Length: 156
Image (cartoon, rainbow, N blue to C red; front, side, top):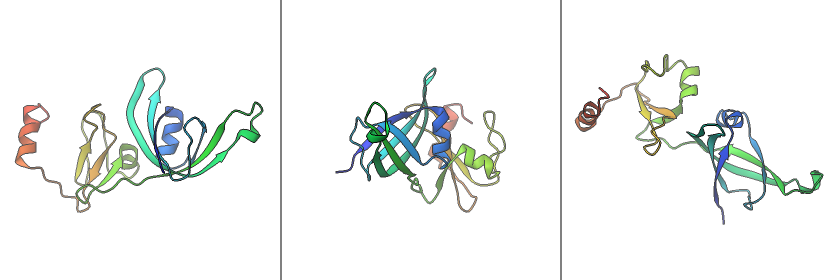
């Protein structure tokens, strides 16, 4: 039976994992990790706490490292593959760093300027945005109800 493991990950390691550059994790095998299990890796800064950023990865291989560690600690090497986020209403969720690299976001924190349709996504529990939905045709429209709600909240 496959399991889902919800784990902390230090910012130093989170970025390379999120960018797809780091495809392995060494952990203490205190959770009986197995190939086919899913990891939810939540970025955690020891000084600030959870940042709201997360990635989901599939364990493709789990190799016990006990024989290679001097004290025989139960370390395990997890080979991981990022799980593609599903499209929402035909739009793909892109992380802010992806959008910036592709020239789709020119300025962040004061306003977001973009040549394509873009809708920010955020976690309602934390209020943190880890990306935006990009409309494939570059056209984005909002319902009257969403516009009314945004005005009431002072967003427009």
